[in-house]
Length: 511
View 1 (spheres, one colour):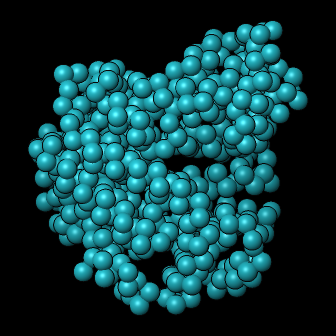
View 2 (cartoon, one colour; view 1 turned 180 degrees about the horizontal axis):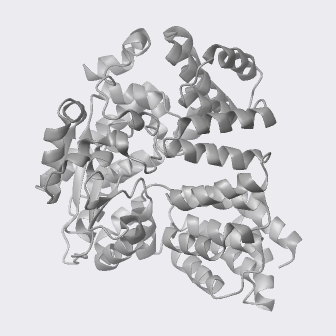
View 3 (tube, helix red, strand yellow; view 1 turned 60 degrees about the vertical axis):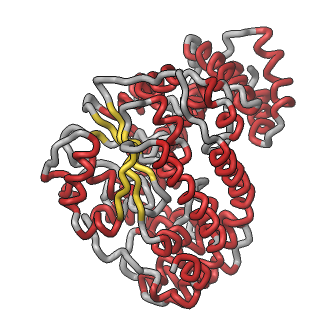
């Protein structure tokens, strides 16, 4: 395809004008069905049409064609990321070494795509290469700062953020990341953030800046000013979240009505790899529970993956856009659960790195418990339960990308919590012995006792290394990534107390 046609097709796809994009791509493929960019753009179109199977067909053809330059290679990685084909992405990143890419921009984009699927070690290699290629390319510096944060190298991350701000003095995301790293001289940053926020009108930029200002003021103990900044941040995020809340409510309703989950379709049991699903609300302690589990010598960290959603799309041939889809719930008895389990475990194998157990810590998999239990009969669920006021306030304080749309207003969180609690009660009744409730307060107060209980529940013996978190060097890519380096902290309960007068809806709902 001509470069101008590629540009036009990509713009149309980005705007959601799928059929118009197809009108450009179709003639190009009719002339040359081995045109790599044409095949990959066709895959984008098919995903836009919600046709997962045909999208995979175009990608399969693209994989057997020649990658004629970095643009095609980047496009391939982008499409594979949308399909959650993380193993293939890692393989490609090994085949096309950093020295073979044309620019810091390409290297940085590869790093971002690898990050998006949890391939953090590979992402770090490309981020470091991007900065080495061009020390003044701000997106490369920011990607590296993000990864350094994940790996617990906070001072290096802070210095990279400062370099970003020297290049782009008003960059909202750099201010936000720096605010998470608890650096000195907060007063200077607060003085810069206040007028910058006042002059900013883009909702996305306002969210970054307002959350950054909230974090800095919170660390200074200025609760009233910090709350005002938090309110501005939530106001910037909530309008876009409302549609996602509506979709989530439809999913909850469909799951409540889907009482029959029994089927004669068997799943896939493996003697080589078992998955421990860590579920619960965001900010309920799932990261801490996972970190305790992966301290065991037989357990690998899978992190927060969307691999299960990817395989649900695959077996249903439906490329749905959200965490789950009501159409899939309605067709739950038609799915091939053996294929679902096999494909999922195959996709998780690189994360397991040869260990017999791997975690999957996507909190919202509590929506998918019914599908998981049937596809993977050996799987177990560790379900975190935490004081809902603590969870609600912590959720308000967290800038999520697309997850947790309910987290920007107290009433939204309250409604979501009631639906979530009702759903978990239903799963427990349907799956006795498969779900272990772990109370966050017990986990931080008696970590060894709870670690022993979790280990026994999943079929392992306790190991002392499970509760030695401060020595960990692996990536932690969640909202708790900074605090995890402090070990098991017992001071995270009731941090909402200074904000009590602003939290009447939460307090009244849950006391």
